[in-house]
Structures are given as structure tokens and as C-alpha cells.
Length: 380
Image (cartoon, rainbow, N blue to C red; front, side, top):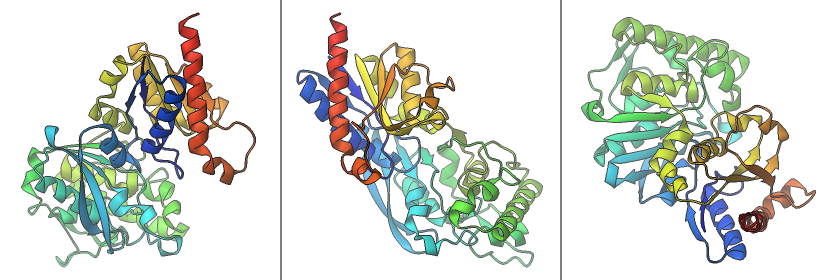
């Protein structure tokens, strides 16, 4: 019997690899003779690099880069030598988790460190970049990233603007002459599962600014700055990204990647699944077990469980999701085709602290019960 384990992380508790390990222990308890394939999954957000490193042969490459407020931080990317591909998480260089709640500064936070990670990938000889852009602390339209790659953002006097989104209100010209030429031979895929435009009521600042510390006044400033950036970019270079779905992702980093790297935005789950050869590995499985911290109506909007279930549906392989919290609404949206069943791993009422503390053990136990039930069903 071949069992494939492909969960996402239980956010804030267990990484995807830790969930895989807990599931594998449950399989060994119920079916020690089973062959187990571990394929941790991610959707392009936090944990994507670690998931890729755990799922396929890839090298972790460390880089000292500038964080959102200019501080030095240790970041890493996954380098897949066989395909000359780098997997990058912008959150590791420019993410919210790098800052304390009282140090958030959405007006001046910069994606420069993300650009430095891209430079590191180019130095490795990468010809393809897969960039996850969830969890940003920034709202600079990706201009910090572009600066690291050689682009200059100038005011009306020809002086370089300071970092951050607010400064773009004074943008007069964009100089692309120094853009790293290696990018022209590099394909860039961006894991982006939101459709926000760059500015406006559904734009980067209005929707995501508050979680980055932006007040109502700051949102107005940032929204105007995004509009000015878009206007200059279109007038001088004929590049119009303002209303492209996903341009407003990660504080407008989606727009910057489209404009300066010619990136393609798409489903993070699908990109990671293809990278770790998940469709092929599912076809060799008798049963697939996936999971995440919470399964609800949002899970059908490009999350890992939905992506795994879709691939299992295509391969006609049964798939069970084990989750911390299970909302029946997940099945009311019609967005979970292929998901055979889902179970919460909680054995009974418990405080949040206890549920988190006992998560690994509960995953192991529930996995063992699912495998026992599957074995019994095979002989009915």
C-alpha cells in the first residue's frame, strides 16, 4: 500500500514537514508495511521554501539581506540545481514577522531585501524564479526590490527618492537603464492568490495596509503614491499594471514584479505542486492524506488542501484532509471537488493552548484511524 502525505502547515504551530512527520508516525502504527511518500505543501506564503526543501532535492542557500526597515536579516532560498530554479519567499526578507507590532512602518518599509534575494538567485545561475509574496510588511509597489536590481526612482530634480511607498508621491521618472540584464533570460513566476488592483478601494493600501500598521491617513497617502507610481510607469514606459488582478498583492509587489521582471502571476499551490512533482507522485499512491490548520470556506480559494484534492480528483485517488478546526461551510461552496472526507484531529473540547500543545500527537492518532478505516474498506 502506497500512502502519500501532502499537508500544508498548521499555521503558528507546526510546519508542513512537522505535520508530515506526525502523519507518517500514524501510518506506521496502523500499517507498518506501507510505503510512505512525504510531500509537504505550501501555497506561496510562509513556509514555502522549507516545504520545497523537504519535498525534493534542493539546496538551502543563505543570504544576508536588508529587512523591511533596512536592518540586516538572514534569509534563505531553495535552489533546485537540476532545473536552475530558485524558490524565494518575500516574507523572509520583507515580511511582517520580521518586525514587532510597535515597529511597523508601512510608509517607509521597503522590499529591497527581496531584490537582494533575487540577485542571489541570479548569481547562482538561475533561469527560473518562483516567488511567494504572502506576508509582506511593505507597501512600496516593489520599488525597493527593483532598486536592488538596478532601477532608479527619481524626483523632479533628478534625485533618488528615499525608500518606502510614501516617497512615491514625489516620483517624476523611472530609470530602467541599470536593470540587471540577466533578468531578460530568466522566467519569473509569482505565487499570488489575490486579485486586488494596485490602488483604489480594493487596492494594496486600503485592503492590506491596516495589518501593516497603516492608519486611515496613511492609507490615503499610500494610495495616492501607488497612483502616482502607476501614472509615471505608464506614461514613460508604456507599462500599465494598475488594474491587473494581483497587482496590489504584497503592498504592490505584484505590480513591481510584473513591470520590472515581466513576471507571471498565478496560483501558488499549482506552482509548488508542479515544482515538487505532486501530480506524478499522486498517481503512484493508493491514498493521499493532506491537511491544514483550519478548513473553511476560505480553503477553496487557492489553499493547499483544495489544490491537493483537485489533483487527486484528476488522478481518481482518494484523499482525506486532517485539520485542526473543521467548518462545514468548506463543503457548501462547491470548491472542494475530489476531497473524499475531512476530519478534525481534536479528540474533544480543548483550550487553544492545549490543542496547540497536543497537535502532533492528535495528528498521529487521527492518521492511524484513517489508515485503519481505509484498510478495512479495501476488503469489504
